Amino acid sequence: DRTAVTVIGLGAMGTALADALLGNGHPTTVWNRTAAKADPLVAKGATRADTAADAVAASPVVVLCVLDDASVRAVLAAAPGALAGRTVVNLTNGTPQQARATAAWAADQGARYLDGGIMAVPPMIGGPGAFILYSGPREVFEEHQGLLAALGAATYVGEDPGLASLQDLALLSAMYGMFGGFEHALSMVAAQQVPAVEFAPLAASWLEAMLAGLPGIAEGFDAGTADNDESNLAMQAVALDNIIDASADSGVDPELMRLLRARMLRGAAR
Ligand code: NDP
Image (cartoon, rainbow, N blue to C red; front, side):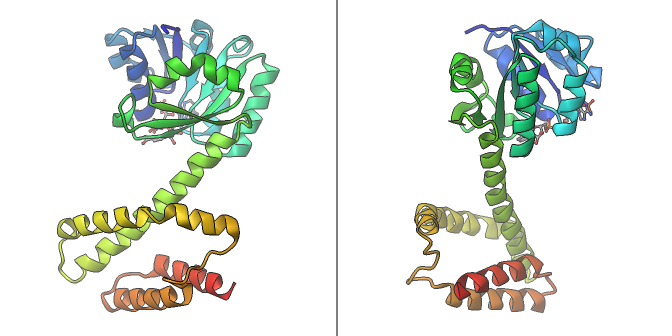
């Protein structure tokens, strides 16, 4: 598959996407609002488009990766009439509602539309750990699967265009919860002179062991039985009390743990 492709948005992520497509032999046209960001890609063989409309017109597949939904709308509005017959692959982070609205708008323009959620940081693009969620018409996904695979494992999650961003945002929620907890943990140990770098391997082992519990938690969630006998929620709320007290004793703000304790108590009451 050597389909020509356009990449619009050359921030950290768009640049990585364009780089991977170029590296896989796709003739690649690029455009960015701030034109100079295209220079390194042009030096590697990409074609520079002078306007967003030229960029859209240049290739049958148009990958969008800009900051947010408003930027997507700004870019697409600047390319009126150019979208007919194109396949737009929008990898900009957004909400399911935004994805559905953009899909409907693209259909009005005569374009085919896939929405995507990138589960990787830029250096991972095109490498083994990266995966990207896609939603929209299955036949459009299947037609372009080869091209999309150049960016990371292409994972199709359904026809409803909102499903990729829904699961992207849910995965990010899980990640931010974990990172927030980890940062709190670092503050706790650092306040008692345990260096963060010494503690980090313990945290990694512990979290890795806990990951094994995710399927069980999900089963309980589906069955409506969130509690379990070996680690009941009322007992865990007491551990959270201790975390909050120990944090406060060290001058560490326990706000995140207070939030979790309140959730735990609500769960126990249910
Ligand atoms: P950057 O901040 O590096 O780049 C933002 C890009 O958006 C730039 O190309 C910028 O253009 C463009 N942009 C912003 N506003 C407008 C506008 N009004 N009109 C046209 N272009 C605009 O962000 P990233 O590249 O890191 O992220 C891009 C998308 O990828 C985001 O939706 C992000 O959530 C997603 N993503 C990023 C990840 C990451 O780790 N970096 C991971 C997973 C997803 P200009 O250069 O002119 O400012």
